[in-house]
Image (cartoon, rainbow, N blue to C red):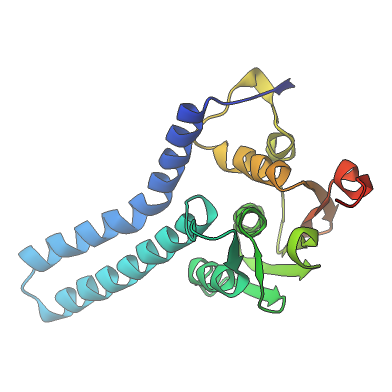
Length: 222
């Protein structure tokens, strides 16, 4: 394993690639639906195309709103983000019949990077249960003491190979690509706000716990 420190330009480029990957599918579906509307005269087929456009536009909007908060400079004028906004964009992302979101936390303002970390942990949790299941988000503590637990439960729950290492900042082969950048970025955000991510595995369950790093917990009060 090799510790990796990406140049800012490389990090920005890979994150942009990741965001584009997330929205290309619904945007492509919108284009296909518009093409059908241009060529199709049958009312039933036009209704199907219109419904496809509506659903795809909603999916694209939800993904962009989520990425704006998870990766971007949303709320950059302040040091905190409303966790209610984080819950809303996550519910927009998890909007299907297969996966349920349980947000077990009271609404509060929390440090920006800690909210971004929670959202990125939610993305990893979703990848753990591709066949659907339940994602549970629990927050404890306040302000700089905020900690989080994001758990994914579902059939054949499994963390992809290398994700734990990427969160820790180590990479097999010493390089990060657009596919692996999100897990790597999660680790960067965790370290930026003094949290350590640990992974707990059980039968059909993966839990991602973000807690105060040992050195931060032992540091004398300022």
